[in-house]
Amino acid sequence: MRNFFLLLRRLQVLLLFLLLQAVSITLLVRYNKSHQAKYMEWSYDVTGSINKRYSDVAAYFSLADNNKRLAEENNRLRNLLAENFTSIDTSATLRFDTAMIDSSRVMRKYLWRNAAVINNSVSSQNNFITIERGRLQGIAPEMAVVSAGGIVGVVTDVSDNMAIVRSLLHRKSITSVMLKNSGTTGLLEWDGKNPGLLQLKGIPKSTALKVGDTVLTSNISLNYPAGLMVGTIAKVEKETDGNNYKLQVKPGNNFYSVDYVDVIENLFLKEQRDIEQRINKQQQQ
Image 1 (cartoon, helix red, strand yellow):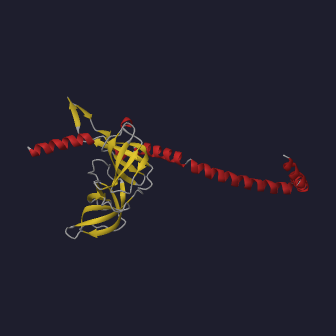
Image 2 (cartoon, rainbow, N blue to C red):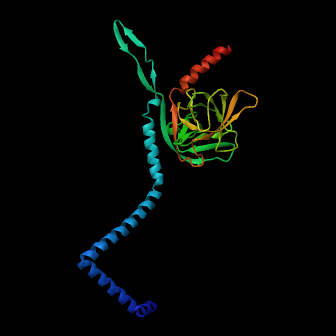
Image 3 (tube, helix red, strand yellow):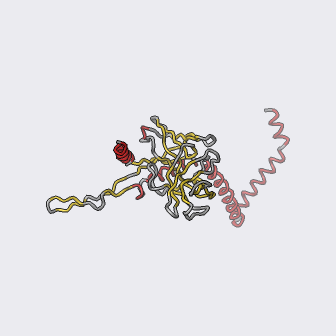
């Protein structure tokens, strides 16, 4: 404490000068309109700069909450898209005596649920993603998973509150896709080498295509709705022993930074599987 008083005593002249300077500036600003206007302008600039910096910092720390809200809003809007519905028996009518009853109706085919990614691997040949939704939230195996950039993978296993997604970056991942321009379908795989490139096979050499063409999910995919973004053609190669191209596809997603996804349930999947299995059994008999 003694040292503090000694310091004040040593700086008393400087402190007195600063005090008088502050008083004089206050009086000058208060009783002089031009100086008052300049002072107010300067104070607004300083306050605005401080507030902007504070807002930038606050916005940075609220990015996670904002992303979550955007994911929830995207999920709500995607569930309203016409592509998630299908027309059932649109031309049929029921006859009862002489009355005509229109039985055409539209039914929901796809249901979207958003989920947060809590674990993600990209460095092995068989990569998986863990999401924070499971059986209790309606998630089941074989449901498709997409994110803002494009398709991500397919659910393979679920617990009560979590699920495992087999990423497109998996040696056993096979997805039916098509070229946007021509509608030609092929199979999308991954060779386990470069996480930034997928391989598209089964496209005939007679197909007109070029680097940069868009690749979408096809209409014969069991898991994915048709027309979802997959990626773009990065390189065109010809098979040496066949009549097809081997295309290198740059995925629409950056798998290093997937944080929120949507899980898509095909409400007709079980029905389609059951009827196709019955046909296969009949043909084998």
